[in-house]
Length: 253
Image (cartoon, rainbow, N blue to C red):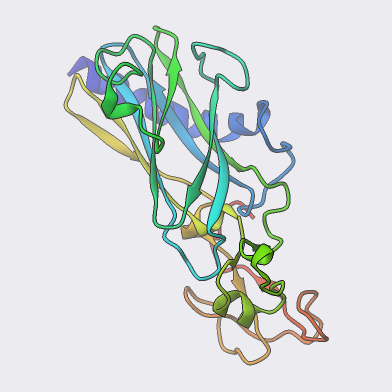
């Protein structure tokens, strides 16, 4: 019971403190960015020896607007890791359409979740090991591509024309964005001692994506709707006037 109370108190503290603290650390992306195409955060994580660890799952659901391969960096913030360097505090990998990758933030001497256990050494499983003391912090995810909102074409080398319009992005194989809001992120802080845990919330993944207006669209902005046409919209091609409109509660924008 004491352990459960401690976990609850620390989680409340982390939600208030680390959400702001996450933007003050060294990572792959400049700290001034507040765009869910390039950064996502979860405000609380922990790893306590003989007590708890953090698990994160990241899925690429192969949306028609997504690039086939998306490179990302998953970083712990405010936690002392085994190799307490930028590389030691993070894991870098490429996730392909249809894949789910697992990330464990766990103390370095954990009895079963370690690099000696074949269940945790496959290419879709990544370990960030912390020092063998109680570690509390947050999670920060950034893109490897510094301009992920630019359309990427995996099949350009095979003679496929560059993707320029929204219709081409949706219909042409290989076209897509390498943004974080093409991915789905989820996780849990799990207490082994108590046999329970609590879910992690990620701000900036596909649950918080933007809506792009089209010349043929109309009506109110809502989830799943393209939005209204704006004559002075800054985006688009060949004179088409489009504007990116964000629905309420859309990520960290």
